[in-house]
Image (tube, rainbow, N blue to C red; front, side, top):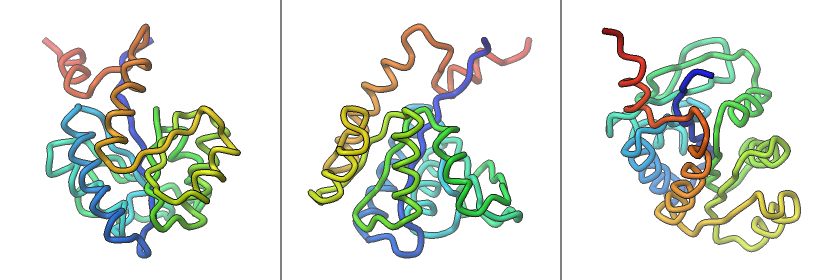
Length: 186
């Protein structure tokens, strides 16, 4: 098995994103990049997607945007823009391509809800940043112990650090910096 980078999916509202979720996305993007992990999102130039890519890219991180359409119209900061032509079905690809998923749920809509539900179904570690008790109860009923909750980006990153430590034990997953060193040709 070849070594590959750790991919963290960050999902949240596009145009309808709250200021709080945009702020959290900025914090997450920078923190994910600082750890050498890849940031994956829906890639569009709106809300959480735009913010997480802008912050991760500015911090020197690799960003991957899986776009719903067939054109490479991605948010600034997306390094790898992949048009899927899948529309909302690309939400499943977003989840399956991620080692763990963080959902920003201040204003959670149907697209982000589907990504969270797909993460539960696929058995991906899922961290939902929300204070809303209804959202917590709903996703806890779906995923039980596979779903955890965070109050802010710092809390979510602490949880991700623990999850990634577990993923790294006995695996071929690597932070991107180590992956770049391990694949460097002489």
